Length: 459
Image 1 (tube, rainbow, N blue to C red):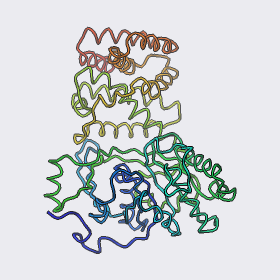
Image 2 (cartoon, rainbow, N blue to C red; image 1 turned 135 degrees about the horizontal axis):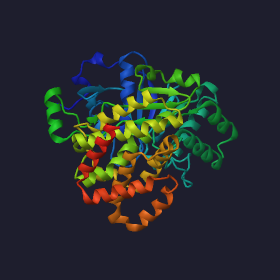
Image 3 (tube, rainbow, N blue to C red; image 1 turned 90 degrees about the vertical axis):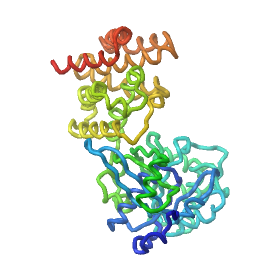
Image 4 (cartoon, rainbow, N blue to C red; image 1 turned 45 degrees about the vertical axis):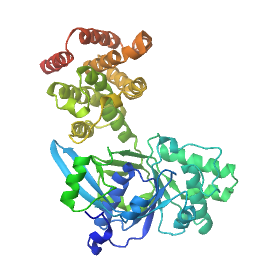
C-alpha cells in the first residue's frame, strides 16, 4: 500500500498557501489542535496560510514528514452528547518541517517573510524557562525562549524595527500566564546579551505575547488494529496519523484588534476563543475536568476500575461523578462569577470525555502527585462551597475520603494529621471525611456511593 503523499491526492486539493505561521514543536498536541483549526480555516477560506514547523530537539529527524509531503491524517474519535463520533480529516496545512539543529539559518530566514506573523509553541512545561547559559546569538540557541529571542531579533533587524512587523506569539505550554512568562524570559535574554534598548522596546510594544489555554486529549498514534482498519478504508499508509477526542478548546487572551486581525483562523470555529480574560476557561477546566478526576480517582481505584471509561460505564460510579460536578462543583463556581448554564454545558462535555470508549486513561496515571493535585484543584472548591452554603458537600467529602484511603498505604498517619489541621477550618468537613473512611473500610465501595446517590435523590 502506498505511503500518503500529495501525488496520491488530487492536486487541486492543496492550494499553494503562503507561509504565515512559525510553529515550534512537532508533537501531537500541536498537530491535533492549532494545526487542526488552521486546516479548517484554510478549507473555509478564512486564513489562507501554511505553517513552517520547527523540530526543536535533537531526537529524530524530519524524514517522516518529508516522506509524506508533510501530510497526516487526524482521526477524531469519541462521544458528543452521548453519540459516537468517528471523523477523519486530512491535514495539509504544514508547508515544511525544518530542524533547529541542522537548519537554523533557514528558520531565521523564514521570518524575513512579512506574511509570517504568528508563532505557536508547545515545548513542554519545562520549555518555558530561563536558561542562563543560553545565548540567542548561538546557532542555534539551546532553549525555546533563546530560539524565539533570536527569531524576533532577526525580524527586528530585517524590518528596521517597524511597528507593524511585530508578531503574535501563542505559547500553548501548560503553565500559568504562559505568554507573560515567555515575554519576560525573552526580555531577560535580550538584556543579558545586550541586544539593545530599541529591540527590547520593540519586543514589549510591537509584539503580542498572548496567554493561552489549550484543552484536547490527543493520545497520539492509533493502535495497531485501528491503524490497519484506517489504511484499508483510506487506501494509504500514514506513519504520522494521530487520534484526538472530539472536544477541543483554544482560549487566547487579548483585547488588541491586531491579534484578532492576524488570527483570522479563529473565525472558523467557536471553540477558538479570543477574549480579554481567559480565567473563566481555566477555572472550568481546573475545577470540573481536573477537579472531578481528582475527587473520583481514589474511589475508582479502590472500586477496582483501571480506566476512566470502565468506571464511567458503571451507572453507580458515573452517577457519583455527575453529582459531584453538577450538585457541588458548579454551585461553587458561582463564587467566581461563572454562569451555571455555561458550567453545566462544560460539565456535560466532561462526561462525554470521561466515557470516551477510544481512550485508555488509567486511574493510576491520574493518581500521580495526588496530594498536590487535591490541594490545588479541589481545596478551593471545598472552601467556596462551604462559604456559600454553610454545609458539608457530601460528594466532595466522600471523594476526599477515597483519596485518603488510597494514599494511606503510601503516606500513613502523617498525611491524615496534615489534612486534619488544614480541614478543621471548614466546620464539619473533616468529621464527614472520617465517617466516610469508616464506611469505605466496612462496606463495599459502590454500596456506599449508591446509598449517597439515593440520599441525594430523596432530598
